Length: 108
Image 1 (cartoon, one colour):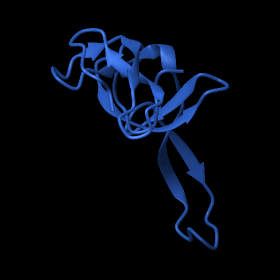
Image 2 (cartoon, helix red, strand yellow; image 1 turned 45 degrees about the vertical axis):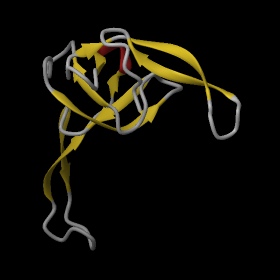
Image 3 (cartoon, rainbow, N blue to C red; image 1 turned 180 degrees about the vertical axis):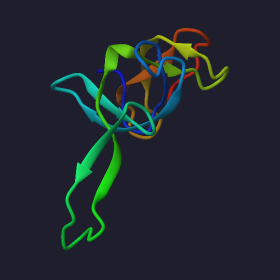
Image 4 (tube, rainbow, N blue to C red; image 1 turned 180 degrees about the horizontal axis):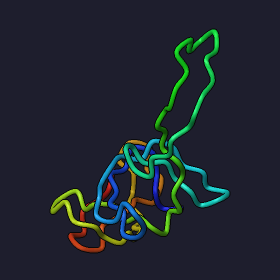
């Protein structure tokens, strides 16, 4: 999976199409991700010791990773991702870096 935690992404399909947010959690086995403020679901909770009030809570639900695209760091537009092998200056080892297909910029 090419999407990682703390990436800024744009939703390209579904009810939240066109909205952007930061990735909070990634589930690689199921190819799903949780994005801040996207795909909100309401949960009705009973009063407990921790939450004596109870009530309705909104929480982000997972969304499939195929429904989002990473935002280009340069132009802030959705882009595909490629991989480039680079040489690490410190250790001298080869590393794989994620690269934007639109601008060619490396994605941190």
